[in-house]
Image (cartoon, rainbow, N blue to C red):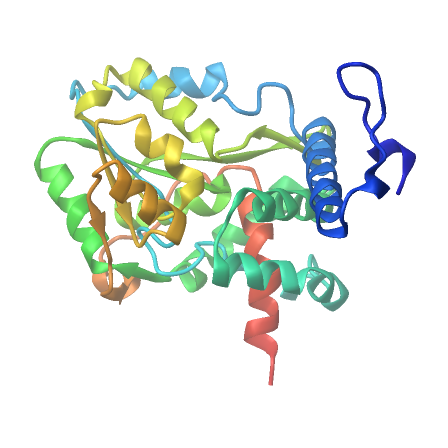
Length: 326
């Protein structure tokens, strides 16, 4: 047992973990490893205010105030669409030389688990760590250019018909509609434009003085930070949160769902389904995906694609392997 894993108790005594049964020692060691990894991630990759929207973003949000007191907030992946919004960009990054086969192989296992099993806190921490390491030094303008050039070709994942119908219903009711996703802005914003949704909360990566990704997060749209962002947006736009709606599939979005008065668990993972049932929240299972390009043939992407790459990196590695395998 490593000495740095043996922490003193309240009396200053260091416990002898070797005296515990093996299964207890493994639990203690695993907890110590997890805590250390989370602390390292926070110190090395996240800015102190990465859990809040910056003031300049809030100013833009406030300027778009529509006068409505109600809004609907939709998670993106596995809620509005049936797969990751960023998977389709993997081939583009690989073809442009940003991703090598060795990079793909090193992180393939983690990405498969993320895509197939879901996104609990431990997996999200690992994915965030790997993504920030991978993309550090990439030129933001190069990424913006690649997304703009290939957006029409690549961003056509399968959207759930039920989600599109819900978005349309909220619009008819006069509510503002938002997409809130831990994926990067450079993917979420143009995808939102295909849906006609211009209100977006997404992860923003930090940039250095040369316009390259610096390995930090300006804003990480994940877990409790989503709830914080919704509160900030509600204050800026004048929403009554008790009258607002939220939709998500993951237990990591429990804070986001709890912050509004009308939450719904959509395609929930096991943990969120249990939580929703315990709190008597509605549960919906979306089962009718349609190709977005066919569903919305007249809607074309436009406008500026924002910087940030965390979400793209999380899934780009997996898509390369899936799309280039024999």
